[in-house]
Length: 193
Ligand code: PRP
Image (cartoon, rainbow, N blue to C red; front, side):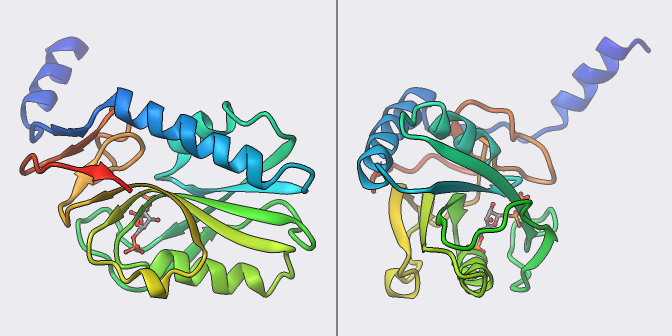
């Protein structure tokens, strides 16, 4: 069997993703979020922190729209270990390269589900004396308690409590490359923020 045939056989075994948020909707919302960041951080020392792996595409699209000077760093944490349910325990698998003292940090997440990851990151980074910490998440699942996420300043969309993939989000490391957000099980309606 040639490489092409093997690829087709593998693709046929995948669950078909059902689009939930189109590429166009995502890009329009990211335009708005970037404009907000431009306004809020003008004149400040901004360090954009991409939380790997899920937010790598979102961070790339966001930062290419920013017109204010900024730096980018990467931090990797893991709590899902490739599955659909959070393990509840967050671990740092790659730390920042930058010293964050006196910098304004904007943590960029792809999704907030239980909120465990964001809460852990805020606590962890607050100990390093940054000038400020704010969180931007492209998605938040309905039902996550807002009051337990005080630094969530920027939110793209609130989505129903379904498992989603695409635009950086994975299931067992698959589907991250999709230019849209999709569900693997259904197709509910979604409103902005
Ligand atoms: C996902 C996602 C968030 C976190 C959100 O990361 O990227 O970081 O889960 O869930 P929570 O609000 O319940 O904590 P994951 O551990 O799947 O790693 P990945 O980004 O490398 O895919």
